[in-house]
Picture 1 (cartoon, rainbow, N blue to C red):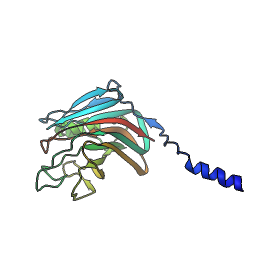
Picture 2: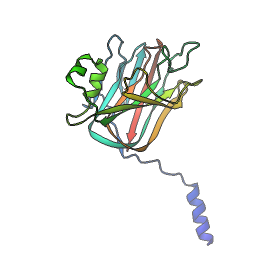
Picture 3: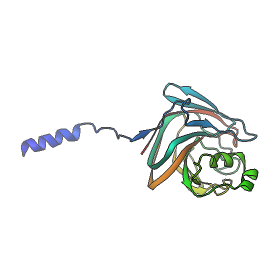
Length: 223
């Protein structure tokens, strides 16, 4: 018994092994899965390739960075880590997420497979970002919505979950945590049940608040 107690005590002192994630998204922009989308009349972010990381420069700009999976994946958990620069500057008297303050340092979107498709007439009048969203779906399926997981500024928040008022019923967003400027960040979320995901939609915006900042994405893991 004495030896067993000693062995258990030693085991408790040993460092635990880091969590082993099943899959990792390649962070090389030349990988065919990556693409950058542009909004009409909004300047695009500048995206740079670093060694083992992607750097996004926001200058009163916005343009989502998309990673399209080769095949839809049944995703149950995801983690993104990196380094935050400054944060969006929220105008005095406004709350982050309101009109005029609807910029977040990071919105990580999961593009969920579904049955929604654009018919010919809808395609003619749809905003370019909506057409680009539906083009992510294989020919034999459609889109359900984008599920956004947000990093917010410190301070007052009016909501933790909402259907975005300008999202045309196509995206829901959650504020997962609040982050500090010039610090490493980690966004991790486990879904209540696995979702079939077509793509990742990464947004870092400064167009609504006229903000300028930089962040780098150093790893994306999922299972």
